[in-house]
Amino acid sequence: MNLNRRQLLTRTVGVSLAGLFGVQSRAFATPEAVAEAVKSFSGDSEPGSGRIKLTTPEIAENGNSVPIGVSVDSPMSDDDYVTQVVIYADGNPNPDVITFNFTPASGEATASTRMRLAKTQNVVAVAKMSDGSVFTDTRNIKVTIGGCGG
Amino acid sequence: MASKPRVKVPKSASAGDIITIKTLLSHTMESGIRKDKDGNVIPRKIINKFVCEFNGAVVFSCDIDPAIAANPYLEFKAKVTESGTFKFMWTDDDGTVFETEKDISVS
Amino acid sequence: MKKHVQQLGVAIGVIGLSFASTSIVAEPVDDKLIIDDEIEMISRAKAPEGHPLPEVISGWHYRTPETRAIETDTFQNPGMLGVEQGEEIWNTVEGSEGKSCASCHDDAATSMKGVGAAYPKWDEDSSKPINIEGRINKCRVENMGAEAYKFDKGGQKPLTAYIKHQSLGMPVELDLSQGEMQSWWDQGKETYYKRTGQLNLSCASCHEQNNGKYIRADHLSQGNVNGFPTYRLKQNKLISLHNRFRGCIRDTRAEFPAAFSDTLMGLEVYTTWRGTGLSVETPAVRQ
Image (cartoon, rainbow over all chains, first blue to last red; front, side, top):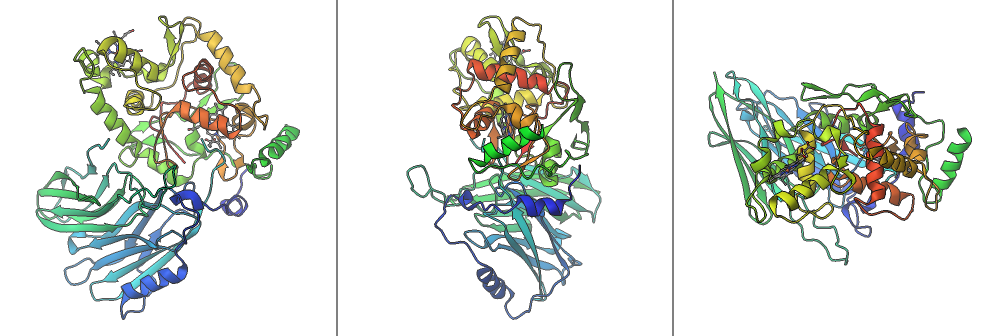
């Protein structure tokens, strides 16, 4: 019998991994903190959507190592390129994750890495172009906890 | 035990190609908020910076926070127009810099 | 069967684990494990004679697409950092005899090819089965004048991973006709089916009767051992087989036997046999 993924998600997910970073008492970042960070990164520009694509799993089997990737549509020429992409997470102890700094020699504004997620939360990517314009994308990642501690 | 950084760069490419580069470093990325058995905070010790240069010019770099997983993995692109050497540098919180190089021949 | 499942649900509920309602079963994914676009792995095989299940399936098939993808690329697989460390140790002189593993065994790619696929083997000297960890220690003590590694310490995990990795893709096949291997298999089987702990669970309760179900969010596999030491995302490091055994036993709140004890060696012989025909995946990547 096959079960669709969505169904599964809603039935089996939802246990938080507060212990992952080793602390229960510490406050987590909030969506407000991330919004604040995005605002200060964006400066005078209003973040637009499109052009930037954040790729994440829908569901992470283990919050300790979650693959994420980002890709921005840009000619990456000397006078029109992506300068930076910043990644934030709104449910980790600290919202900062990583900043990718690109150059025209990057050829393509594409990068991926693996991150820690303390619990189910939103991951936000913000790209800044050489002309100062800003684009953003958000993904929700569900973090599950396993049944066998071994 | 640290092992040398792993880097994957194609050996050759045509001028103008956009190549994929993969890097993996063995590192615990201690976040600075975990506690040991006695309840003491384990000091933060992470790779906080990564730089990739080609023939001396920066192609791509990252500023890294404790939310990056242990054994940091990075994959990115570079446009190559001439033969030369990629240099990769990871900077630890304690100031140590791990370095490695890879040559590519471009025709 | 149904009754059994319900009992298990109740039992596990006691410690806060539960199988997702019995209707939730997801088949192991239909996908092909090919490493580096080159090595076609046998991740499903017809079960050996006497096996309770018709087909043996690698734990790889039960993981999410992202976890599966990491294993298909030896570059991305962080377990390979351990393998590389193992290679360094292989070539490092240690002990009073001034020898390294390579002094006697030369290139592991040749001398160790297929070795990991056939362990545990019978060891005449101790009249017991010996696993790769044990064989490494034997060579360190008898051939190098070096100290035996303690469980999971020193170079034990990386060297074991390095040796097993030389058999990547080769099917697991034990020779149970050696010495008294068969009686250790029998003993391991007994352990496998013995219900223990407050929850009264056996390995078979989870990995035989309930594989394919979800326990919390973990998709239960057959508990095969062909990928050990495995790189676990949870700990972000290589995890040895006996550590995994102990973890699974601990979860049932049973008293747990020591690593390399007779009980766990029997279990290693038996569980390795249960995965007969599957490719060695070391270092496999698991959640």
